[in-house]
Length: 188
Image (cartoon, rainbow, N blue to C red):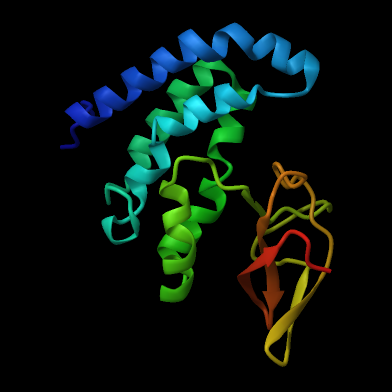
C-alpha cells in the first residue's frame, strides 16, 4: 500500500514555499500582472528556497533528492501565490531535469552546478510547434549533422522566457528520433 503522507523534508519545504507565497507573492502578483513584470527580488527570494537544487545530484552541488512528488508539492505551494510567478521559477527545470536524466557527463558537469547557484540560470526549452495535432514524437523541426555541430531548422512556439534566456534546449527530429540540442540563445 502506498503511503501518501509527507515526510519531514517535504513538510518543511512546502511550509517554506507557502510562507513565501503568502508573504511575498500574494502582495505583488496583481501589480506584476498589470505591469507585465515580476519584481526581481520576488524571483530571487523564490529561487533561494532551493527547490531545484534538491533534485540535482550531490556530485554537481545539489542534494540528490530527485522526487517527482516533491516537485509537484512545491509547484502547488508556489502556485497558491501566483501561477505566472511559479512558472518563471520552474522554467529552469525544463533544462535541468532533462540534462540530469539524459545528458552527457560533460553536459552534466558544465550545466548542473549552475542550477545550484545563488541566482536563477537563464535557460529554457523549446519543444512545442505551431500546428494542429502537435506530437513531441513527430517534430517538424529537423536536426542535420554538419561537421562538428548540427543545423536546426524549424519553428517553435510557447517557449517560456525565451526573451530572457541565454541557453535554450531545442528539441528536433534527427532521423526520426526526438533529440535535445543545447543552443546558445544568440546562435544563428
